[in-house]
Length: 313
Image (cartoon, rainbow, N blue to C red):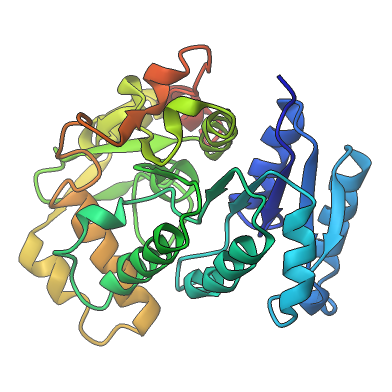
């Protein structure tokens, strides 16, 4: 079977660059949207040129030029969007609506994967303000996709290793603590922690797979479903010493939002849902319209978190 041609939108971003790499590694003709808005961002340009060296095609297109998006879409079979949905970087979820319009007009796309990857927005109707904006906007995009009858796969359910594992889930840093660690509640909520390269591999695996068409693919490889306490214990074993543990209650954690800037408040809300409510893992993956990545693709040798943490030791 001929492999689908893939266009990655947001290809220089944190997840996007990994999607490009995985797409090339798995043999897909890979296109990356190059936006004129890049300005003087030389690092982004150099990353795009490095993709080109590895065999990717750069395609010019801008969200402020609708026809340029339509032309880019017409070159490929599958579109994967990885535009940022976090407020401390850039928050661009609703820009995807222009992409949905372009896909609808082009009429040739076999699969669209919008920017998802984390908490499933369809399960976050109870989310706290102001963090719920992320989930509400993702649902607006999903509705537009389904109203336009665009074939889709939603990939979600993971906490990124770089932001949740390497730092032992501490807010405000990406480095692991070596003396004391903040524990959320009893520290026993289960979280799916993943190496971002594995998220990208699973994502690319879905695009020609009829089993994931018009479904949500959850990322929940069983050996990476860990509590914060288990993660801390792995780190302590690597360090060869115990850390001082400071517990923060649900009430104190939510109270810490007061006086924070907007982006930080959003972050606190998301951490609350992951570590106090257990919203990444507090449901079974069963029934119509859902699949689990490690069951569908047992050949993917995903990185275990004890291995992942060795890099930080």
